[in-house]
Image (cartoon, rainbow, N blue to C red):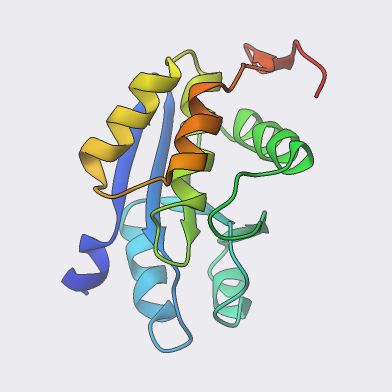
Length: 160
């Protein structure tokens, strides 16, 4: 399980806590559930196509939300809005976010959350990259650098 734990990167800012990790598989999802329990992760956001049977998570009272989008790109306005609604409604929870390798889509979503909580885009990118090397491609960095907050204290302040 230590190999699995090593794939988890904790990102915290103010009162929000995320873990970024790579996608569980059918062969190791049980080990991931053990790590979710260890880190008190009860909400998991999937930013890629399914890679395992979700029943084990449901059986362990872990909520899995699908917010997948194409690899190497940035999330749509709809995904961003749904994601922000979800994290603001669940800010008391530790939120797991994953994609295939945990280097693009999941870090982008976490960075958006940090920016919405008041961190500058450059600081969000730097924080995540300091803890999870090789994150983000050029398109994603440009997107995040130009990202404008749409929420203010959990309420929408800008229409997408």
